[in-house]
Length: 200
Image (tube, rainbow, N blue to C red; front, side, top):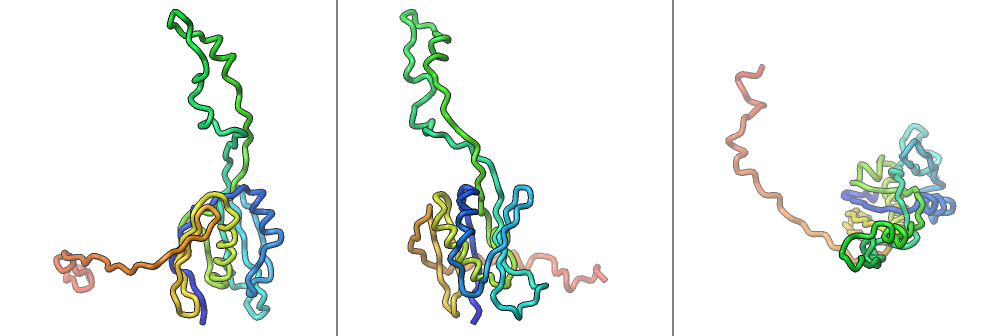
């Protein structure tokens, strides 16, 4: 029986360098022999290489897709330092001392770091059907090394529905709630396009 992923939502972020390190030697499911990593401008694509030789080379295998963005990372969190100039003291006359304020404010060390952002729903993050569930398992491993973001999903494994929830690198218990969509009461009053005398 084929396992499938039905619902998936991801907000995972990790430094691009960490993503490359992870895919250098990942613990892959048995169906996947290897992964190919391609970067096209600001998009990172991780494609599954099937272990099964009988799979047609024209069959697109599942792939993970991440956008690459730059974030400024500060050595010391500016929010922890309080508002700018909080440590400065005003003059006895009550007027601002601009020179003093500039001297007391220090430049916070920072650098631009590229991040791989696996963000969106299933069609955005996990594409193609062949090896889809195996590649979803790889995404779950990525979620466990990502310090920031959430991965939630509903998958069918051997005919059983399973819920997955990983938050900031840690697995959390998850459950599936079945809800009924509200019935559309105005449905009968709408135009029946299939049986309309004005449309030939």
